[in-house]
Image (cartoon, rainbow, N blue to C red; front, side):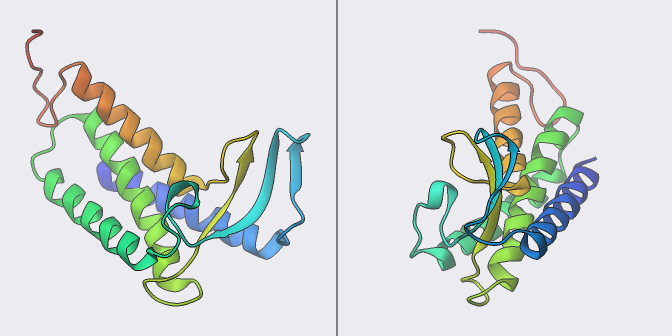
Length: 156
């Protein structure tokens, strides 16, 4: 399940980014729901919310470490909910890593394509959404005592 979810996120992320790059001009947003929801092409050299824009190489290394960590954890995974959460994080991390490796200005420094703008929220993409949703799910599972191995901690 983890690999299926991860692969689906990667495919959707790459497809949507390719469509946006091919069809939306920078500075010319497409209004989906008035000014509330727009699609606009933004090339982000930094992390979430365009933080750490001069540290693209470090962000790439961190994302690679996350991917390795998820793959290592997958061996002892028995919970479908944890598989879903980790699959979302894995797919999102790899989706943005693809940009870091293959988009300009070059390997390990590539800018991530962001394109969804909702209200005042910073512009994001499918990979970003997957990472956030996966992280929220894993935090909730941890708070409610569900372990990755399928067991449940007794309530304190």
